[in-house]
Picture 1 (spheres, rainbow, N blue to C red):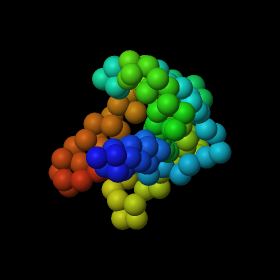
Picture 2 (cartoon, rainbow, N blue to C red; picture 1 turned 180 degrees about the vertical axis):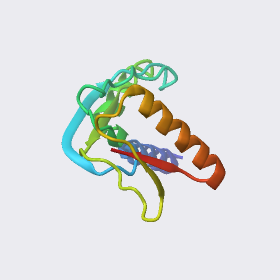
Picture 3 (cartoon, rainbow, N blue to C red; picture 1 turned 30 degrees about the vertical axis):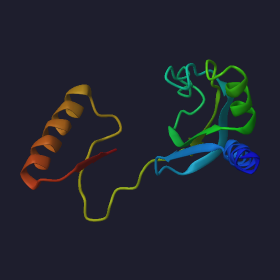
Length: 142
């Protein structure tokens, strides 16, 4: 009996050392700019999630990668509060500047850099019509 109790406690302790980790990659090239929040406050075993991490002003070119993790320290805090307060670490990697490349052979329409709003509207309408006709994307370039 004592042996099985010790074994159960050992297995639980080893399992508690594991850290939950999830990564979402957007496909954009990552930059050196990173936004981190080590104690994003979640509640009731994570049923009430942390507030949104505001990255729009810090990542003007978008986000390349988002990582969430329940670190060992986060898990200790969650355990001490019996799951009422369950913090999580969030790390956001901003994307590099630049634009996506246009695939070779793709349909494009050229719009002048000094085009009027009416010219832009006409080019957009032409792009929509061409896209419907060809069944694929049409790129507008300046």
